[in-house]
Length: 152
Image (cartoon, rainbow, N blue to C red; front, side, top):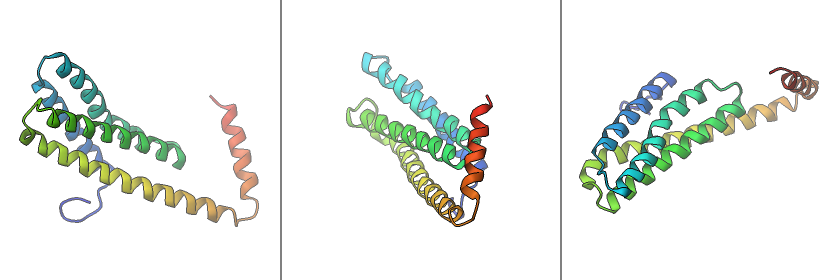
């Protein structure tokens, strides 16, 4: 949901995840050049910037199952980003007050992706349950799957 309580569409989420990545890049530029700073920078940079890239991949999913799988990756990367922010804050690598805004954004994204995954899984389950009651659907789906495996 956005600030006005409306559902966010895919384009709004693409923008939001890209903005998150931009904040990650800017924070990484401020991390110290100590050995731990470099390690955390690399890990955090990789996870934080992949959120938006993987979200875009999920938007291009070829099936509901593919979407669910890819959105799961988005959630993992967002969670990992939050983890690295916590490590930075708890080890006083940076002043926690500079991290709070980005930590809140990460927590909001985690909540959004959890809710989206639950909805997608529920809708996928309902679809498959409904399809089981339509005569001939299992045979059609089996045929389509066999045709998919023959194409590259």
